[in-house]
Image (cartoon, rainbow over all chains, first blue to last red; front, side):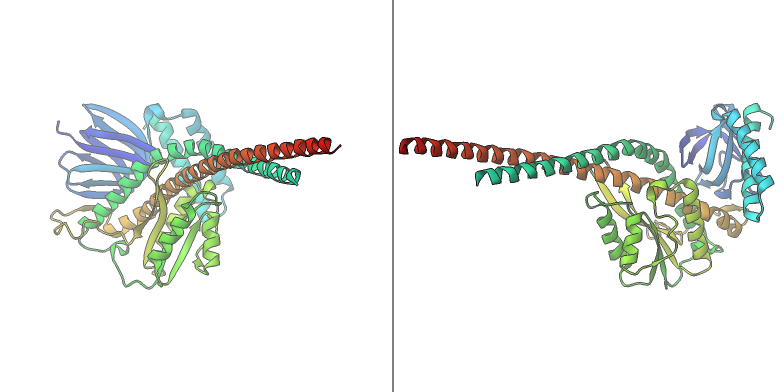
Length: 134
Length: 284
């Protein structure tokens, strides 16, 4: 299969830099897959599972926030967070989930409800990616 | 009379020695913090560079200018994020930044989000309008704080209160070299505007470009702020380490010279005393 240049970067470092055959990410409007030869595109990322195909093998990750861009065939993912399945700490994800639920229960204004919901979603995604449930 | 001067020299040696202890301690503190700061820079730098380049590429390929963030407008007021240190004793670190800023702003109408105590003091002293003082401690700035700074920048730009945004920070080139820089954050400009011909391909925006830019610009500004803060923090520590290292060396030299002076004065005193005794004995 043809491949393209893929770069995945977050403030915590470079998570992937090399040739990939395909990438699927959760955007704000739903899942989106990019394969070689895609037209120039820009999209905002939501919180969800990401899949990257390298040498015919699919790797999964939890990814949240940021932007994906395809420029002249090169794909760049600039995410707020990006964790490969093997890097995810299941215990911490579950702790985060519990904390998020507490925050949601205690939240009074719109903003803190939003923040708590985001935390819960992120935790659920990480848990799901790790256990393979989503 | 010679006794008085030896005492004086001795007390000077003591004071230089205690200064040296302080400079040495500060150097050690800076070095140990620097290790962590450098790690952070190494992690954040690829993101910082990729973010800046990608967004500028996106701006370059944008043809409909439907987003307010991409459009240049007449500049009435300029906003700055000015990143300096929390304290001095870091060589020219703070001053270089302020010099660059003063030069860059000229006589234009500006307001500033100062990051770092020294930046806050500087703005107050010069009567420069301050947007918020919430980020006065550069050492404690987290990614979350940068996200807030990013939202402030995007909001002020979007509502039209500020027409251009810059970040003034110091790039960590190496342990011995740091460079003050000013980068334009908003509006997002096409860096290759002169070289590039008109974009040929049509870019797909998902969702539409207006919504999209509203979503990604706050993240972009936050990312740049974070990158700039990590770079500046490492630069400050490196600058302080170098400054304190040379201060310790100077102090060492001074102690050596003073010791020499002290020994000479002591010898002179002894010689004089002997002469006095001998001449006294001769008289008797």
